[in-house]
Length: 465
Image 1 (spheres, rainbow, N blue to C red):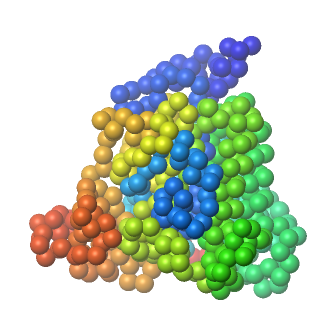
Image 2: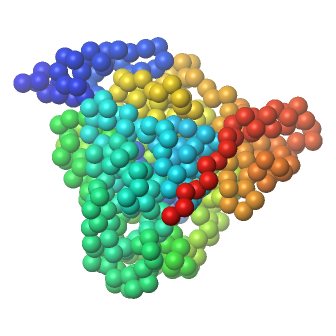
Image 3: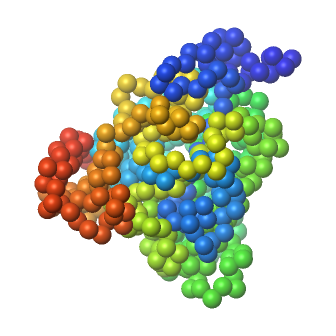
C-alpha cells in the first residue's frame, strides 16, 4: 500500500510516471522522487519594502517572514512588468513583455498565442487551480482560465471587476456566483463601491484555496493564488483600502488609508499562514514548493501614499515606473529538503522564469520558445550551476510609455518608448538610480539601445469589444 501511495504522486501514475520523473538532465531538472505540489502566491501592488523580511518596520507579516526564514529570499527578482496584465502574462507564458501577447492593461482581449504554464503542467497529469484575480480575460473569451490549462477557477476574470473587494458576484469556472454584497453603482465589469459589505472576496478565495488543497492532497497539484491585496478599489477613491477591520492598526495615529493598507497586508499574511498550516495538517508540507511574490511595485491609489511605509524599500519608483521600485519585487521560495533555511540569493531573474522552472520541478521540458530560465539551481543554492540572463527587458504603454533593460549591474531607462533619451545607472553603486551616467558610457548606451530595439516586437492592437 505504501508503494502504491508513493507511485500515485507521479502524474501518469505508477511505474510509467516514475520513469518520466527519472528523466533528469544537467540543466537542473529535479532529482527523482515524488512529484512536488506547486503553490504560487501572488500579491497585487505589494512593494519591495512592504514585508518584514525585506526591511518593513511598521507592518507585521510574521507568516511570510517565517516563509523566508524557512526558505530562500531573492533580492534581485523582477515582476513581468510594472502593471498588472502584462506582468501576469509574462508569468503565465514565460515570455518577457517585449514578446508578450498582452503589453498593457486593456490588452486582455488579445488572448494567448503561447501555451500557458498551467496548460503545460496539466499535460503531465497534474491537477491545476487558479483562485483569485486572473486579470487576463473577459467572460466568454478564449483567455479564461478553464481554457488556459486550469481545471478549476474561482475569482475575478477582469481587472476592473477585481478593484471591488465586496463585489456582487465572483466566477466559479464559467458560472457567475452571486454574493450578498450590494453595489448600487456597479459598472459593466462589476466594479464599484458596495454599500452593504458582507462577503470579503479575499476571505472567500482563501477558503476556496483550502478546499482545493484538501481535495487534491492525494495527488500532485499546481495552485495559483493571485490575491487582490493590497490593490486599491479605485472607484472608492480615498476610501479605496477596503478591509473588513483595521485589526492591530485601529488605534494607530496614522491616516485612515495607511491603517487600511497595513491591515490589508497583515490580512494577506494571515492567509499565507492558514495555507501553510493546512499543508501541514494534510501531511503534504514537505512535498510542496511555495512561491510568494507580487505583480508590480507599490501603488499610490485609494488615498494611500507609498512613502508612508517606504514601500519601495531602498529602491526608486512605484507602480507604472520602470525604475527598480516599479518592477523589482520580493520573491520567496520555500521547499523543505531543497531550499536552505534563511538564505538570501542574488540571482537576477523574472516572472518569465517561472514557466521553465515549474516544468523542471516536475521533470518536464519547457517549450522551445521561452524567454525564461530554469532557476531551480538558484532555489537549491547551486549558483555555480545556475544559468544567467543576458538581459531583462521591460516596456510600458500608458502616457508616452517607457522601456528599460537590465544587463548585469547596468540599468537603462528610456522615456518615452522607442524615442527618448536613454538614462544609464550602475545598480552596484547607485541602487536608487539617482545618477544618470549615460554621458560617461556611450558604448554601454549604444548596446542598451540595440537590446531595446531587438527585444521589442510590434504590439498587437487591443481587440475591440
